Length: 293
Image (cartoon, rainbow, N blue to C red):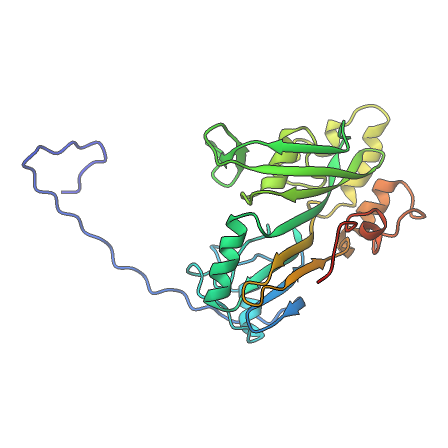
């Protein structure tokens, strides 16, 4: 018979355990999709991922991911976890921007160690609802899975340590444009942390906590206009810097504000005569501490 989970066997009970046969691993199917590759050598590649693209195969997206696109272009990828070859770190489906993939096992192992040691610099441009009290805010709050919804993350005392540094670059009518720097890499970290301190990401369908409805008075209509022209979470991985895992050279990459969020930034500024979104991050000092080489 099949034992119940609550069964407590006697000391002399004979327990027989059978393991189901493993299904053969899925084959990675190539999918020809355009990719922006900003750097590539025989060890790694840096991709500027568009919003809407899932990073690696998973239920519901077995053959239309970044990994499938890399396979289609003939990119050699390191082993990595099953179904995630080459993936050193991930971006959410609807987060755009820079990420590094490994082409060899040596590069993958060393990049993974650098990521764990916080030696890979990742900075995100984000529109956050409301206004921060200070120009720089440190958010330290442990995170884990929501006990009521396994697809969501939440701040919880028994979670894993997480820290995000938030620098305000510009204050607009109903939101701030910020630079968020990761000191850890938890799932949905920036989105959860900003929501936790009362400034969720504009356009976030999961953690926005009501979005424009949070605003009252004369700001409500302005917030609703911004929400209507924001097609997805206004979060972009704009800067990536790391030491090359093989050559030791220091690499630093920058990605400007994405085109699909152009109207959102113009609306947030209240005028299309202010900072041009195509150069807005540079103009506003996002990359001010950037050093090439």
